[in-house]
Length: 128
Image (tube, rainbow, N blue to C red; front, side):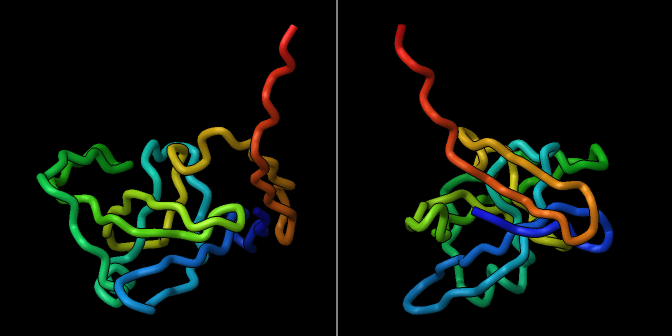
């Protein structure tokens, strides 16, 4: 997968998120290496798709240290050419791509405005 570094020097990739029925939405998600989960989407996007809640409430610690209680949503995204089920948080702000989604990938960022952002599957270690 490829993306670009924006003018604010944030690494970003474009994702297709699939919802109920034939609904889908393109989003530009910022790569957030400090976010352990999968994906954050703005509430209006989650409501548009709409994405079903998972069972149960979860305690979620935000970047500012505050905690909220909310349910994850279950959605699908296009990831490396395949549809992939992911857990999604509905929060105000920018879409965020977290480390759980990037697990098993190498992240390469050319850290300048317009620079390339590349996520590639890690190659298996050779057996000795």
